[in-house]
Amino acid sequence: MKNKIQGSRGQGVKGSRKNHSTTRILESLNPQIFIILSLVMIGMFGCASTEETTELRSSITSIYNEFNLYREETDKKLSNIVKEDENIRKQFINLSNSIDSREDNTKIIMGKLDELEHQLRTYWNETKSEINLLKKGGGKTQIVPQLGETNYETQYKEAFDTFQKGMYEDSIKKFSEFIESNAGTPLIPNAYYWIGESYIMLKNYEKAILYFQEIIDKYPKSEKAPRALLLQAEAFNSVNDKKSSITILKRVIELFPKTEEAVIAERKLRALNLN
Picture 1 (cartoon, helix red, strand yellow):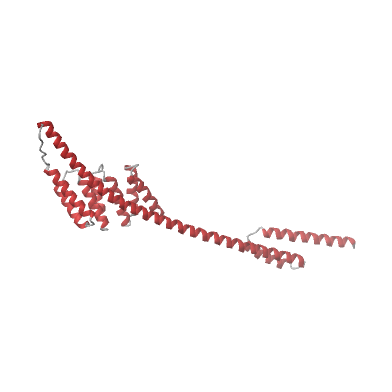
Picture 2 (cartoon, rainbow, N blue to C red):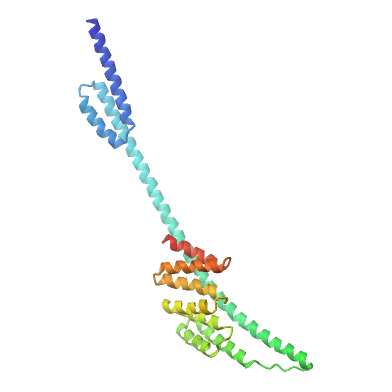
C-alpha cells in the first residue's frame, strides 16, 4: 500500500513537472500561436489540477498583454517613421525649389555676363585699332569703326534685350535673323543657345532640343556647350524621356568635370533616380 501511494505521488510530481515544462515551451512561442496551443493543451490536460490550469491561463493572459503592448509600441514607431519620411520629402521639395530659384538667378547673371563680355570685346577691338593707328602714324589718331563687327554685336544685343524682356517669340525671330546674316561670327553659338532657352520658356521642348543639339554638334568647344547639354537633358525630362535625360546628364559630368554644370547634372541625376 505504501509503495502504491509513493508511486502515485511520483506520478503526480512528474505530471506537474511535465506541465510546467510545457508552459515554459509555450511561452517561448509567438503569442498568437502560444494562445492557440495553450487552449489545445488545456483541453488535452483536462484532468490537470485547478492550480495548474489557473497558472496556465495566467501565463496566456500575460503573454497576450505583452503582445498587445508590443503591437502598440510598433504602431507608434511606424507612425513616427511615416511622419519623419513626410518631413524629409517636404525638405527635399523645399531644397529643389530653392535650387530651381538659384538656377533662374544664374540664368539672369549669365545673361548680364554675356552682355558685359560683348561690351568688353567691343572696347578691346576699338583699343586695338587705336594702338595700331598710333604705331603706324603717330600724332593724332582717328578710330576707324569696324562696321561689320559693330553691326553684328548691336544686332545680337537687340535680340538679347528682347529675350531679357520675356518676349520669347520675338527673341527667337531676332536671333534667327542674326544667325542668317552673321555666319562665322563668334556669337553664333550664343544665338543658338538663347533660341533654345526661348523655346524652353515657351514650353516647346522639342524645338529646344533641336537648337541645343546645333551647339553640341557644330560648336562642342563653345562655352555654351555644357549649359546647352544640361538644358537639353531638362527638355528631354519635360517630355517624359527620362532615359535620354539621364544619358545626357552623364555626358555633362564626363565631358565637363569640375564645372558648375557637372555639379548641377549630378544633383539632377540623383533626383531622377529617386523618382
